[in-house]
Structure formats: C-alpha cells, structure tokens
Amino acid sequence: MVIITPDHGTTPTQGRTREDFKHFNVANILEERGLLKFREENGKREIDLSHSKAIPLLSVYIYVNHAGKFLSGCVEEKEYERVRDEVINTLYDYTDPKTGEKPVVFALRKKDARILDLYEELVGDIVYGIRAEYSGEHGRQITTDKFNTGSMKGLFIAYGPGIRKGYSLKRTVWLTDIVPTICYAADLPVPQQCEGTVIYQLFGDIDFKRKELETLLRNYQRLKDTLEVQKSFTHSYG
Image (cartoon, rainbow, N blue to C red; front, top):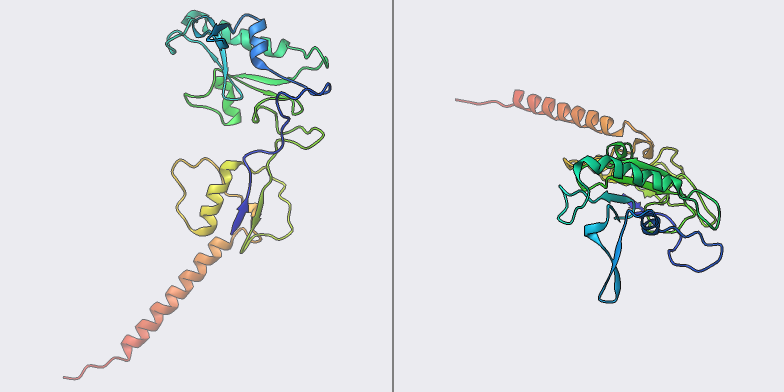
C-alpha cells in the first residue's frame, strides 16, 4: 500500500513586492494597538518581552504575556481576560488599508480552539485564521477558501490492495487519519496517542477485515476438524 500526502497545499509567499499582493503581518497590527513592544538590540529590532502584553508565535498563536506563566510576563492575573479579549477585538477590527478587506476570518480563545482540535498547554491564548489569499507562514490561511493558484488543502493519494480505483473521496481527510488507516489495513497496532480515524471510504469493501477474520476462523475450524479425524484413525497396539 502506498500513500502520498504533503503537510499542506499552496500558500502565498510572504515578502513579495507586487502591488496586488495581499500582505498580512500580525506583529504590526499588535504593535499599532500598543500590545506588542519592540526595542533595538545590537542593531536589530527585537521584541521587548518585559513590556509586551501579547506575543505572536508559531503561525496561528498569540500568547498573553502572563506574569504567572512567563519569566518576563507583565500581564497580571486580573488583567488576563481583558488583554486576551483586546487582542481578539484588535484582530477583528483590522482592515487592510490597501484592499479594504478584513483578513481575519476567526480569532478564538484557547478554550474555544478545541473545535479545531487544538488544545493542551502549548496552544496559544488566542488562535486565529486568515483569508486564503493573504500572506504569512503557512498554516494560518483557512483551507476552506481558494485563491488564484489553489488552496491550503493538501493532496491525498492512496494505492494498493483493496483500495478503490479511480475514486475521489468526499469526506475530509486529516493528517491524523493516515496512521490509523495504515494500521487498520496492515494489521498493525494503533498507537495509544493516535487521534485520527480510519478512512473506511478508501476501501472497496469496508468489511474486508471482518471477512478476513471470518475466513481465518473457518480455516481454523477446518484444520481443527481435520486433526480430530486424524486422531480417530490413530491406533495403538499393546
């Protein structure tokens, strides 16, 4: 069985200079609102951690610089929700001055981001997504939209015994579905931490595993019956 899949599809390239290129820089947006501060360090512009209330990291995350969580934190517990909501409102309020569009499609609190399967400690206090045609590190453009060259949707191709030929899947395939699907097809144990599901629609006969087991049980019973018959033919002489 062969599976071909990337981690993402196409995405605009950040830093292009074409006039019609739609640039998006969340750091600039937060800086304009006074939520993110910079300072000069060895001739370079660096984030001033001790004076920044919100810090963008890892493509789609913005962290509130919580004093009880980070060494350089400056946001006290009583201010946390106010700062978090201010960041969300800032993202929704932003309008691209060149296009007049609202690039931010959604901005969620950490606890609400679970609907995107994002949870646990490392997830940012705010999770956001932008329109597909806007630039930035891949991963923050929403995959339900398209622009002139494609979308963020990745390609998925599967080939092998039992897999339907010439069929285009209708269901959404997630990267997390690939491991359990391989395990299911190859009779391998599924990792305990696996969060995906088997892509049953991939197979021509979704009951092929049950039928394999039934065949195995029938053959086992035939073998058992044959051995019993052989035993009945065995004679011992004193």
